[in-house]
Amino acid sequence: MESNYTRWHPDHICFEWRKGPGVARGNVFYFEETITGEHQKKEVAFTDVIPDRYLEFAPTNGFFRLFLPRISFEMKQIGSKTELVAQVVIRMGPIAAWFHKQQIALVRQHMCEEGENLKKLVEAA
Image (cartoon, rainbow, N blue to C red; front, side, top):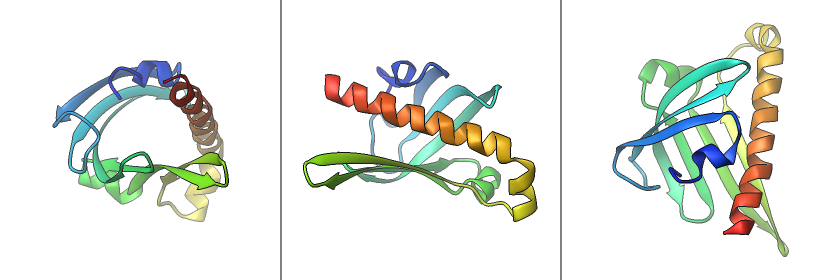
């Protein structure tokens, strides 16, 4: 993570481990990125890890976790191909979703770009 984070997406700024090095359940990391034109700082903990298949993490701040309970990346084997499925679970009502539809679309675009770039990084390794 630390060696590829800024290579993963041009909007990624920095990454550091806060508790335990490596991708393992319970480990905490901090990262900064720009999404929707805003500089964002986040601290998250891995909540589920299946090596080479699934990563799930959530904000360490309990208040933020109410609105953003998890983010995940899953690699699904479909025949001879591998598909990366990225998911951000956001809790908001329909009015808030309508009000923030542009920001949600930009987050989706960012995650699609992350998926394409992650594919390139994995294939180059």
